[in-house]
Length: 224
Image (cartoon, rainbow, N blue to C red; front, side):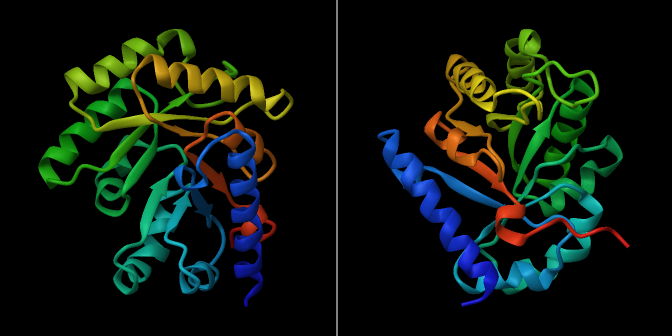
């Protein structure tokens, strides 16, 4: 087995143990392998042992890496987990199967228009700024219910869940619990939360998707 396959087996085992400890079915948690800054060869290591769900932060990097991988593995599913600029909406809708970072009205409108034009409807998660950090993207908790309604009713977006990135200096469990509560309140079944340092906590608090990068691929590679 490759090093990547070893890491994948370890992370999957930890997810399963955390799910069982919370009385959950491990099959209800999907691991998004975050391959940002790592080459296609590293992605292929995980594809070779059966993993199919990957995440990228930047549209441009994903465009360079994933069309060939998707051609070889048609069942590969790609999530956009980083911020999306409106001028990249066409490329994002074409390439990604899920967009996890819907966070403002203008973006929602642009996505709806492009999805209708392209006839392709990637699942959407709304990113929530649970820590209300001024430098971070995401809808504020107080504005979430109205934004969910606008995305569903006005823009007809396929909103399936919520996503968050807790502040680095705060207890993540508080943010995960808040996100799960907001999702349930809005009738959303999917919750994307938890990264390499805290995905087991997220699973125990109801995550249906966890976004794991360094625990699978090692340290992030510097861009050339």
